Picture: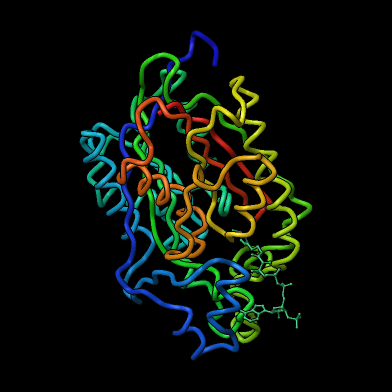
Length: 330
Ligand code: UT7
């Protein structure tokens, strides 16, 4: 980072998970699947699901309150709120504006961003730039999803994989040479077709036909996404390390996107990083898209597994296709 730019760190983390647990055994009752298949192919045992009345802004607000408390920052001190999500409460107003109102963050600008499972990393990178340049002091970045609302619960290819949740961080200025050391983002729109929600936008507005054809639900070519993910996770982590002149050997903790234990282990293997340096919670939450990384980060920090001065790498991939990574000196 150029000397004229401020160093930016994570001042506080928070998360919010719905209470309701859905186990693989529960899913066996609604689709043709088995606990054994799901565990052996994904590593997922259960996931959390919101009730009908809960929307993404509700989880986001709770996660944000906890992050603000940990950071010891009042809502009025926030300059910007970014919510990364593919499950906004509605097209507009943005979920970020709803959160702004819920928090009483009256001095904050607010917008949503959509980069699927990579959304939180995109948000971190954007928030960092605003603070580094001196434009803003405190930015709240939230990754939040209620994916249960856009899953076809008759489609075993997708409904067993995902869960709901929200994670948040407060970014702010920090000591020189600490905090976010690098961020790297990428996209490949050619692969967009492998993970989509086709209807409800301007290409295919909602109609009786789109509802009848289940076009408002997630469609995924799992094996194509799998191949992409295995390749990109290691590459993206290395790229962010190169950008701040660090090496895999310097990593104290890797917090990857939580999509599939086989993707995570093969990325760790490619990096030659032992699994005891990798945070995994997909067994209990499944894939929470943009919420996976911030929830995992909050848990690792709260448990004391990430400590002062640790080198932490965040890395993720998702629909778009998109990917991102980030190196932080904690
Ligand atoms: O955050 C990004 C979002 N997405 C991802 O990260 C997903 C990445 N992909 C994956 O994690 C894996 O590809 C899956 C877990 C989705 C699938 O695992 P796979 O080892 O790639 O299985 P597959 O797609 O090759 O399917 C194998 C078989 C198929 O049956 P046939 O055609 O071989 O007879 C599927 O129909 O497994 C079947 N199958 C299931 N069987 C039982 C697919 N889903 C299920 C299921 N239960 N839930």
